[in-house]
Amino acid sequence: MTAPTPSRTYDLSFARYVYDHIDGGQRLKLCMQCGACSGSCPIGTQMDHGPRKLFMMIRAGMKEAVLTSNTIWNCVSCYNCVVRCPRQVPITYILHDLSALAIEEGYAEAKKADNARFAKAFWWSATVFGRTDERLVTARYYFSSGLGEGIKKGMANQAIALAMVKTKRMHLGMPHKVKGVGELKAIVAKAAEIQARHGKEG
Image (cartoon, rainbow, N blue to C red; front, top):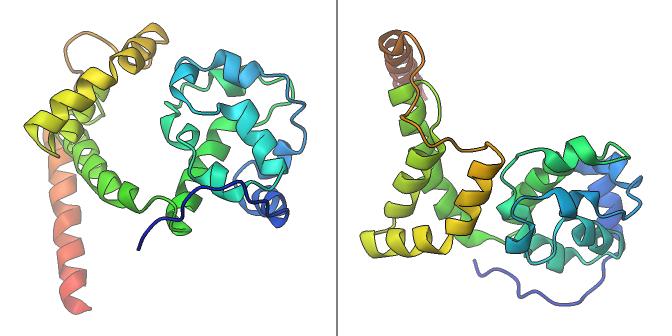
């Protein structure tokens, strides 16, 4: 399925849909366009619009432009915007739900394969260390699409990595492991066994 081409079309029912169906959407109506969210974002310069403008676009009914924006994918969940919003709008939750909607609506077909690779990298870190290590997850995800592509993506996202380190969303030390990793692996193995059994049973 080919993703729709972004255009300046206006669907005024889109704002109502976001208010009623997107997590935190009701509070979006309280946004006063102060810009605290975009100004607080550590990687706002990597976004094509930023949260403030994106919310204005939602109100204007610019569905295609919103669901094809890279703003909904670049959020690193630091929650600076949520903490600093004077109207307590849950910006992070809204962006995450909009990215899910973009996939459901066919605006991000390529993201499905990306999401599958990322999920594998995430799960690998969770089972090996009992937690996720942002550096290792990112590296495994990037290089899952090839050595050259991995190096290219890594170099292109240096600014984002540095911003995450600055906001303490990514550490620079050795990977941390939870206590009892062996027990965790036993639980995961048992869960896989149960899942396989249920799969055979239909």
